[in-house]
Length: 196
Image 1: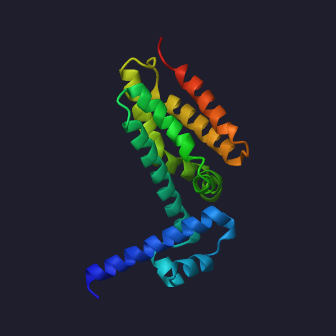
Image 2: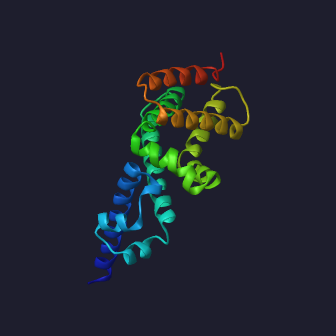
Image 3: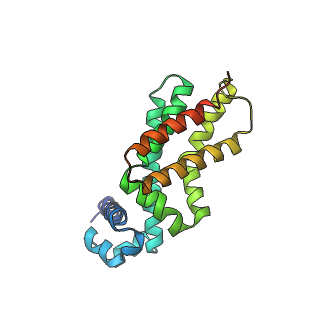
C-alpha cells in the first residue's frame, strides 16, 4: 500500500470512529458507551482506536469539537445570509438556539460536554467554536453605533451564557412552545441592546 493509500485508510478509520462514536454518544450518552461498542460499530480494532485517540475522553473531545464546529458553521451561514449587521446578529443568535434543539447536539454539546470535559475545557471549546463569532458581531454593531459603546468581552460572556443556559433548559423541556417563547424572550433581550 502506498503512503497515500495508508493516509487515506487512516483518515477513513478516524472518520468511522468519529461517526460511530457520535451516534452512540448521542443516543446512549457518554457514560453508557464503552470502547468495545465503539470499535465494534466502527468495524475497527482497539489498536486502531488508540492509534487515533488515547482515551475515550479524547475521542469524545473530538466528537464534541466536531458538533460545536457544525453548530458554529450553521450559525455563521445563517448570519452571513443577512445583509444588515443587526439582522445578521439576531439571525445568528436564533440559529444557535434552533441548532441547539437537535437531540444529538443537546446530548453531546450541552449535557455530556461540560460533565465529561469539565467546565473550563468545555468553555474553551465553546469559545473557539462560537463565542469568537459573537464577539465579532458585537464589535461590528458597537462600531456601527447600533449598540451603545461598551466592553465587548463581558457582553459576549453575558449573551453567550444566556443563550447556552436557554439551550440547556430547552434540552430538558418537553413543551414544544418553549422554543417559541424562548425566541420571543431572546428577541426582546437583544432589542434592549439597540441604541434608540
